[in-house]
Length: 105
Image (cartoon, rainbow, N blue to C red; front, side, top):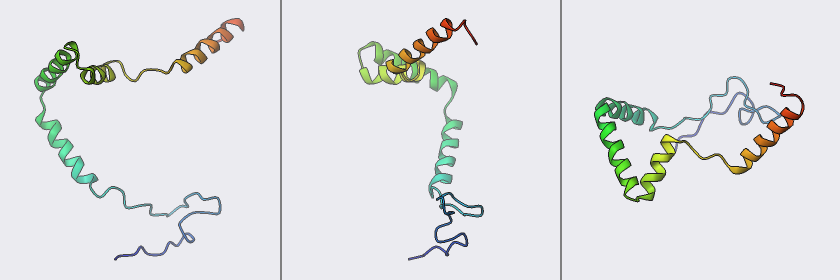
């Protein structure tokens, strides 16, 4: 078993506030990261715009046929994540407040 060399920045590379100090080497990162990056690059090279169009048409067809997962995927990418109602309520309240103050923008 390999152990890490002791940090020169205290016992764990952090200051007395718990923040990382300058020179802290950080963690090793994801050991599979470079391999995944190479695979993604190959996938991007292999997929053509025609492939994307065909896949999109198939997804749309499945959504129209009632496939709820296809509908969620399609709407998730086309429309984005739904905004929570609470956020909209707060925005409307702030807009009303601004309007009451004379429409400052």
